[in-house]
Image (tube, rainbow, N blue to C red; front, side):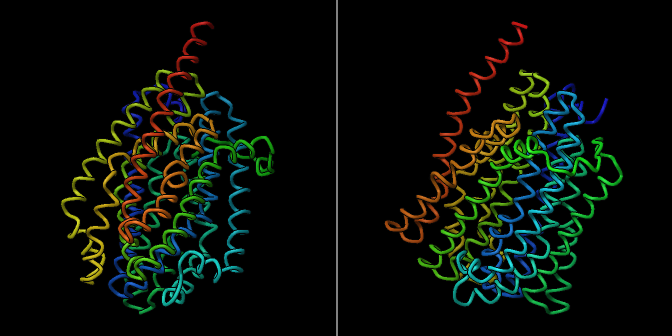
Length: 453
């Protein structure tokens, strides 16, 4: 039995733990390195450094989401191909992913350099924030193609049944960055440039580890040179599913563009720094939901390909229950220890005073996060791109961005913070209503087909 075949035979809860725990650990460590980066910059560079990182994050991940989207799209194709015992399609899909990720990653990296100043300005790098942001981003861009490759590989490695290796791909850059940050920022006194070089080198370390896994041939997918030639049918299927991730990150980047400019308008540079801290905390709070979401996708995809409808339904149900329970516990801890958490990032008393109420407001709907993420990921896993896309866009695209544009006219800066929990509540309601009625119809239809056959 191959490693991926376990998805169709082992108990669902065992598989969820096996997949979700390493994914959560990997995301957690990756988030910790982002937090450590912010802590070093906040304490040794200042609030402008935090603001610069806050501006760059959405641009970086917009470009690198090429690899993430291709990885998730291809992982869905590979999971279903393995479930259907189609090894040739799995190999061809992996080859196409490699070609797409590296060629597109390099292209967008070059475009980033060409349009660096207008791009950063559009995302809120105004006034005193612009200069340190250019310094930071010009170095970060160098690592974008390898980051895209690492993100693509991470999803494939999880899809073929190696969640711990996927976890290490996320841990490697975190460890490297945590080691290099104090050396570059404090010892070598490189300031914001030191933070950028530490991050870029960490991306290279992550990509190198992923490449080593494939070179050793442990994936179980046999890759031929001809698989690197793009196949229109396969690339279309990859992009159909991967476009959900592109759209999600595109909307997130548009959100940052609008949010950063609104923050600057209603609260100045300090408010952007406030959101920088909030955003880092969001990464931590979302860890369980993201880990369970990523862990459930190959299980659902494999069993959908194998037409094991009961296992599909059970994996969906259990992942939602566990994600919601854990997120609720974290929500309580965040509400209780808000001031203590913020003091980790900065010793600026005025920044702490502004961040405490803002953080509490934005995190009010945290227990609902898992339901949103898993519902859209479910449709990615089973290859249904349109509902996956629509559910993915629900929070940021349909609710959060309009609320950010409307609420500040009535509530000022607080309106920006209030927009987050309101959008979460509305998006969860839509996602769950759609999932309930559609999933009931689809699984009933598939079960009837099995009985007929």
